[in-house]
Length: 52
Image (cartoon, rainbow, N blue to C red; front, top):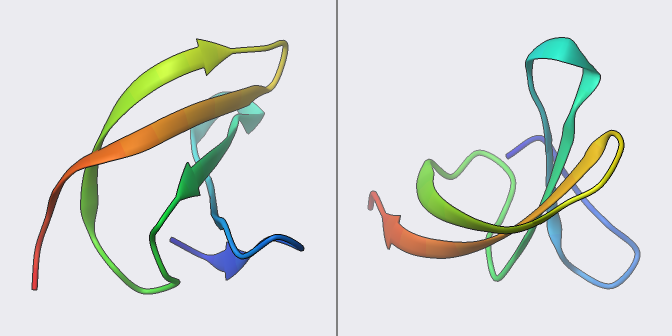
C-alpha cells in the first residue's frame, strides 16, 4: 500500500493507471485481496490474507 485515503482506507497504484482502494490495510503492508468492484480506473478490494 502506498498511502491512506481520507476515510482511512489504503490506496495502492498498479499497472495501467489503476488505483486500488482497500479497507483495513496500512501503507507499507503486503496483502492479498479479493476484488469486489471495478470502475473505469479504480478497483475496490477486501483483504483475504496479510503478511506480518
